[in-house]
Length: 497
Image (cartoon, rainbow, N blue to C red; front, side, top):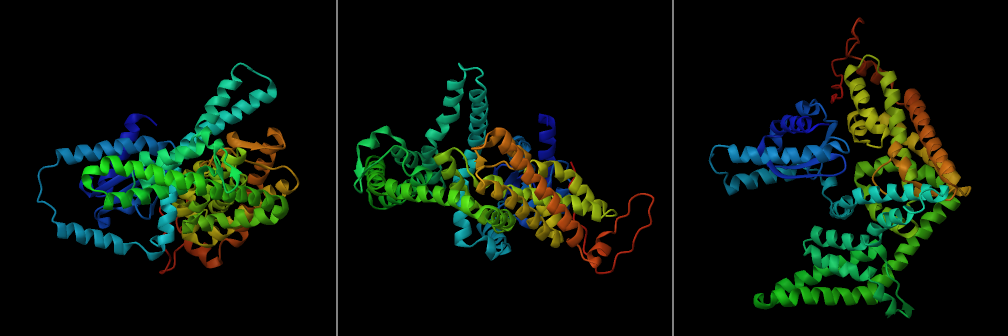
């Protein structure tokens, strides 16, 4: 997508979300432009979904516009620039009073459902905010590590292999520092102090320290230790800000923060987090080695509901811990099967609703992203609004997960060297014990099973007769329209590209 097209997309979105003055914050994740709004009622949802490049919208703690990987990172800066230009060029208007802002904020808060605002889910979102910024580096380093493995096994370019190993491993060796930095930033502390405390974990000199009768080792506790250490640093810093005299704050607060949190990290958190990390790795390997197909079936079948509930965010530090321990997470390829079931279900919907142009257009535009593991357009634009196809998509995910889990139990264990991608985009990140050829074949087989079962389950069980009658209401050219019942639901809107 060219710069002009990125700017055109941003320019099309801006007036449909209320213009520059309605924007309070702008951010983006892997696939979505996330914006804070002053007045939710100013957003024109249906027109927004029809903007070329917009795959769908999601309302959560922020208003989220699904643009897809790569695109969102290019559209967001253009959107930010247009917002700034709009504010600068705007003629002076009557100032918004504090009471008006308070009323708008109260209305936005009331509009959010309680299920999206529970303390537990809010905490999980904050944990996700710590790790999501790390995903691009995990992906880049993971692909380089995979390339290095291929060159090593083939005996090619022996002079470049050590360089690639250094490039791929450098980030992972210091990931604890980045986690500590982001944790302190997310929870209201000084980011660099969180990074400083977390850096203790990877410092080689910790090998000279004994804790709980055992000698520490650099990296012990990993990202979980860094997370705990930075959280403690934030609490110590906040206590210091409250009680330390302002004249001494610049000297005393950072010193006490690093000292207290550092000592607790060395003589407690590293050991405890190390035990937890080891237990997580052992349990994941044990689960797939012994649970096999059943474990894969449960994991693959339940992942889409976890995504809907926002609970999938709890898996991010687990994935990262497994990658840090063994170089890959064995869970992600199984969970990726949920996306395969979703794709199969969407294709079945396409064939079962030959007269509904709206839904079929949505599916045609969203399927390429679905094959690459971006499931939001299909979930929010197709299966979830229809209801039953969402359940049959989960059945497809369960079948694909069972397939991959079975091979794990048979000894062909493999995983992903990074988190974030799934679907076909996961192929370059696969790593396992059975060799690259067998690993790719098993993962591809799992995707095929997920596609097939998701398709069959949805085709035969995804619709009632009444649903088929109500939804086949937009005839193709040259066919007679089928009258829709008076109470027929509004067809799912079709975002276009």
